[in-house]
Length: 604
Image 1 (cartoon, rainbow, N blue to C red):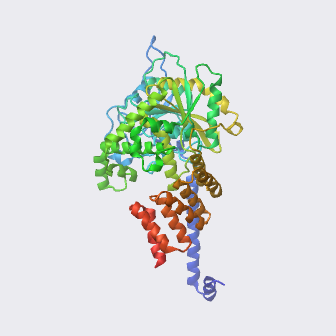
Image 2: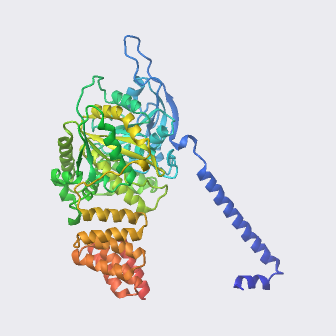
Image 3: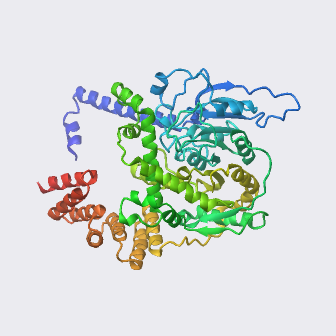
């Protein structure tokens, strides 16, 4: 019998004991009831899907008398992100402290006025990531809008509320800003159209800037004709139709590591244009190799020699993009953020404060990458080329996802969005359907200035695309994708995908294939060691890490993983040396610091 039961038996006649037991039980009931109440509240649908910060109505300008043309957006309503000025309202920037410290706008943003002038009605402002500085769409002050298509997943950001309002059918269209993917990402995750125009094509007067060399005004719609009409208004396009031949170019290397359904979008697009006039036979290319050859200054920003090939070049490009964003954001808001941080430490998100307190070296090199990137994409797409890429990284994030998953989704998604952001090209996210509890979409990118061409293409193709995708992605054949990538890299990426799905044995098989194809790559051994550790194969993991270090003596992960294996093998002294070596290579590495401290405690 347990000590607790013996104690109760010995003192069963004591009324004080039963009073304590009663209080404990009652406390437990209260805790359970409160937990259930909070769960019910969390599962209760938010009014308007939590998309709006504030509701109001801005009526359209009156229809001019004949012979004036009919207003293009008559009878449509729209929402705007909390970043656009509206006369008489404070532009909140997604942050209540910003709202408290700023006055009402004296004028309405030019884009909002243009939409009102063309017959649309504005019905309110929507939730966004604070300071337009995020990709998840989550906002701790105003709440996270509920993704109508995938309620358990993030809606994407920063223009989350605008995307949700459209996806939920609350408005006909909505506008937001797109700096690093803030329209394209939520459009993809919410299963709607999202358009990022060429940089500088739409006026940003009356819109709070985030990073001016990347900022654009984007818009969302459920219907391609509405997307087209809004584009004509905001881009001030003429209605003259100029016939141009279109050449679809698939970036095979970017589709290579997507899930099957996303890869099958290549088949859908290929079949859609097969019998359509005005389309050349589609081409296939390795976009990353093209960027390496055409953007030489990007090599200066590579973090290691192992990143010279493959899709990692896009991670380098996205790193430059985010550095540029932080630099320009700091120039815009450093004074305000620092003044607020002195008074209210927690009112500004950590990543925003980090942007303001970061020092930037060699800014000219960042702008040089941007200039070269624009030239490279203009050259590629100059004769009616339309580049086809995945819209976001596979497997959308669950709400409140763990930091590791967030980081991986962040890196892969920004790698894709950096192509248009850094080149200034226009891009459209196109919904293709729903499969395995997630929205499937693809993106088209056209040359800078080719906005009308791209909008016309979507309008021309979409019905046929829907017809091809309507049979369901399970029944579609998987296309043959090569992308001119090294077979060993293909095996490694397949291993990475299996690892993320926690399929450790499958990951080991793919990493082993990669090693058989190229036995001198330290990363392959190091990655296999990570999977072996998950299976408790510590001796084999140690051996793989030693081989990785043999090929790359500066591989920090190899030292960390070998140290972890040696701890499990009770070889603490050798493990300590590994962690110390990792700290010599990366003195600020928190994992190495914690591991060293843990081993010292075990040894003592």
